[in-house]
Image (cartoon, rainbow, N blue to C red):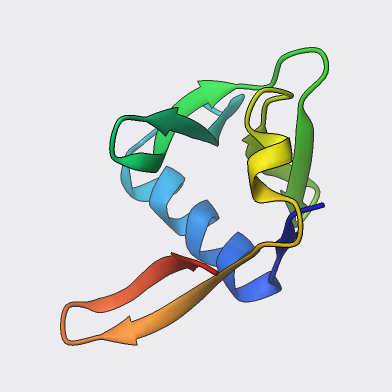
Length: 87
């Protein structure tokens, strides 16, 4: 199962706020030709969800969850600031 650090959850909550996403919106990890990407979406039945301060900030669908088994989502600092890193 995917592990999401508290720092990553807080970072995602900040991203949602800066994007002025609707209150019910979360970030979804989705498959793309380039790998795993982020999309703003809503929680759906069967999703695995991750909360920050009692708000769902991240969702992972059943189709993507097996790809992320044993992975960790965290943040790393770069010259451009904090960014999410999946390892």
